[in-house]
Length: 162
Length: 83
Image 1 (tube, helix red, strand yellow):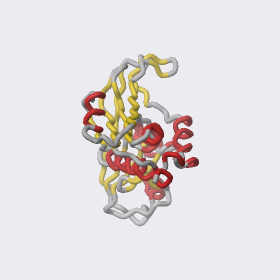
Image 2 (image 1 turned 90 degrees about the vertical axis):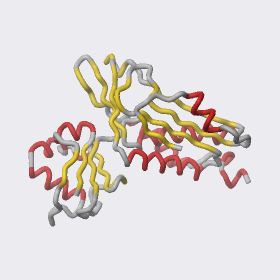
Image 3 (image 1 turned 90 degrees about the horizontal axis):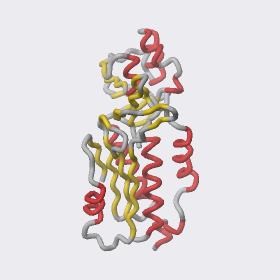
């Protein structure tokens, strides 16, 4: 499931309803991104996340579908917030659940890496010198590319597991 | 065509959305960029470094050689920084 929303989310409640009742799930891995109070040397008082309504949901659904193609997953969840956020606030949640831990760990890592380079969100940071658009990082591109090259870990691949 | 702008591209162009009637000179995304740059200085500034701007047509990432039709939704924005 994917959700794009302004309001905060409750991590424990989200994970519980994601796996609720499915006792085939043996592993659940989640990642939560938070707003930092520093960007390089700049102190950040807040940030505003802009997105492209419509394309954002489409891109997130495609990323989620790709994770399900690559790993045997029982459930996935992506929640991304937009609007004004302050240091310490939750920005994003990605989670993957599977029978075994490898698929859950890898799919969770994949979801956040691909989301960072493909989902149309932009961060505007409030600094003492005014608003500053965050530049894309080469390190994020490299992290996403890694999944193009290596595919999936064969031990957690759907076919290998059968 | 509906043309959308996001983040600093939106701020530089000065609007988030506009309707542009497609002409023969706007057959591809790259040709649309070229004709916008000719039209006004704000576009010339926004697209000064084309490597810094991403394009989507009907909410899918595309390259500059992607063909356009008048019913398309086109969007221009910087490399994404979510997560």
